[in-house]
Length: 252
Ligand SMILES: CC(C)(COP(=O)(O)OP(=O)(O)OC[C@H]1O[C@@H](n2cnc3c(N)ncnc32)[C@H](O)[C@@H]1OP(=O)(O)O)[C@@H](O)C(=O)NCCC(=O)NCCS
Image 1 (cartoon, rainbow, N blue to C red):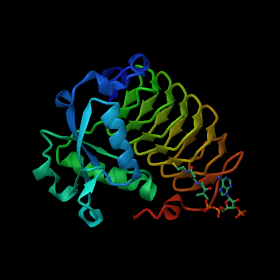
Image 2 (image 1 turned 135 degrees about the horizontal axis):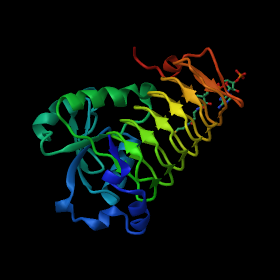
Image 3 (image 1 turned 60 degrees about the horizontal axis):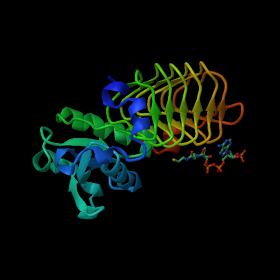
Image 4 (image 1 turned 30 degrees about the vertical axis):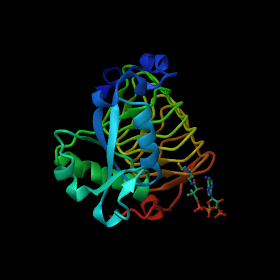
């Protein structure tokens, strides 16, 4: 894992807010990037990488069964199966911009596949996010605007922090987690792999939740939730008997 300082420090992000990082490099100096996905998140990722990163988006890719068009945002849409030939891993980075489909397992599955083919993964950290410089950040991470990530946090691979969340000091967000918006995760929490956290949820400090949980919007999580694969909801939140994987139609 690299720290935020290795990627771009919180202080730098504040300083470059007005211009966005896109103003710092010309297109030819930027690294070439293929976005995996063709839905709304992929189109939004194109906007953010293009206008606020050191990457230049050259194409989109999806699994061949999902390839129903020739272009997305006026850029070529190719099949992942053809990626190594058309956009080889030595010359192109990738970012998988797929949301919480099948409880985050689709993003994770494609990540593992492309990693085994030798691809490097781009991270996007908004120039309008505040990420402290010692935060450890994995690969294929997308951090939208107005997120606050405090000192000593860790963010695993394939994590999405949609806009406006607070991630308190020393909290660990494990790989594959999707945090929607305006979520408050207090200090010293642990959010298990592939969890979905609904909008406006709040976690007390020192709370651990197991992997593969779906936390419904506006939940108030005050105690540990150590069973995996549950729908968690309410204030104070409780773990229901409903399977999160079943709710999200995740394939076994
Ligand atoms: C959990 C969720 C998926 C349930 O949706 P649903 O299946 O349409 O649920 P329903 O409206 O049919 O409600 C089912 C029951 O759960 C309850 N319920 C639904 N959402 C709830 C919530 N967030 N908190 C507490 N109870 C909730 C309903 O009151 C209802 O209870 P009842 O059976 O006693 O009447 C939905 O509330 C949710 O949290 N979605 C996530 C939204 C979000 O964060 N989106 C971000 C996108 S980036």
